[in-house]
Image (tube, rainbow, N blue to C red; front, side, top):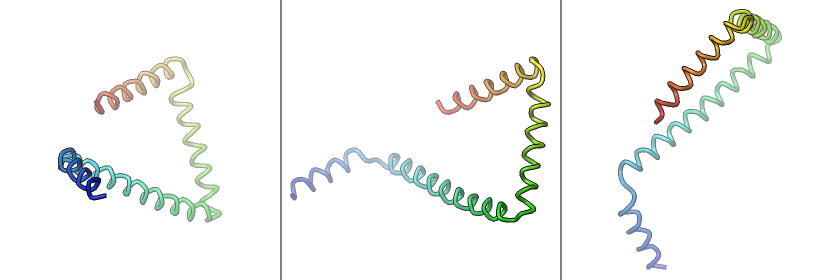
Length: 99
């Protein structure tokens, strides 16, 4: 048993650096913030959805936004091509930033 503990301690001291611990801490912090914000957003949406006036109003706002998006971006072939090009440009910027 003591041999295993000594082996583990030596492995940790040789392989775990401060940079790795910092990355693990940042990742854990991001996960924590995302989970907490998702819980808060869920509760806010549930409260708004429970109010009868806002539920219908938000559906109407969503329908209007869908109609405007369709009218502005999807009606003609030129608009669809421009939208496709814009999405591809943004995608390539995001993907190239990660590398």
